[in-house]
Image (cartoon, helix red, strand yellow):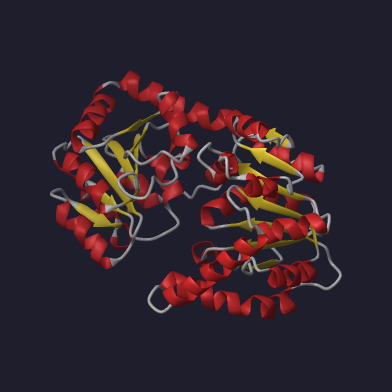
Length: 413
């Protein structure tokens, strides 16, 4: 496998270099790879042992964040390094103050792997959710460095469980323990002889509770909701989502709307405004007078969405008519029904919320209208679905406590 794998890694790198000619994300990755070891020469304290956390991108980092912050809080002297593969994670968190070093992960080539591990001298390596770099896992195993994967979830269509997946299954034996989200993952792993498995859920729920505890008070939003109308919060929306809920909003004067689009640029904001037939205002241009006259508030800046959900009664989560839905847990935490489009297959929390009747998937505007009409007209239905959402979040928290106690012998609080 190693020769074929290394050939594939080299091809992958060449494709990134080629894509960098036109693609901004690929270009950032290419440039970031060039600076890793110069950065480490300055950032790493020689002789110290680092706990290494690796996240593919920003979403996985958020799952690892409760572990990182608890470890730093309980053991402030412990050195921590965080690596990312994707620019979308690194660019946002490169100045993360709970890590002593943050950088891109050097490409999974044998010489770079050895150089990186020599430099950071890890006492433990923790991969988050979906990261199976063969050369890293093998070298960590050879060096007898304790290696874990957390918040992992496995599905039977993955290569590990295919008849031709023997070489890929070998990678899983390099983990000292796999902390998985559900019993199905444990059963799949057991079927291929992987038994060093603990079912403890998803650390994402602990992160959501942390975020709620740090939620901002937003006076303008509080003023916006004061007239007693019910509020739909549309988070991380895309144009296909907006076509559905804005049309409904235009025809229902009893409803207020807060839109926090996934992409915030002038073109998208103007597109949203062109669809609105009722008074609206952008958050960054709002004054108390504007807010009191508006029925729709457009959030045209980043960093507020997780705090805004608490001001609504119903949440619509975008992305379900594209590559996949965005974070549903931040809304569900506040005891609100959650609605999203049909592409949620890869998101366990979405399946679970539907099963416990705290969320609804829609495939068209007619279905959105039917469920929203019922939520707005039936107060008991609205309350019960919201309670189901909240109970699901709180009932699934605690994974971080299990992992921290198991690996480091510490508790979060």
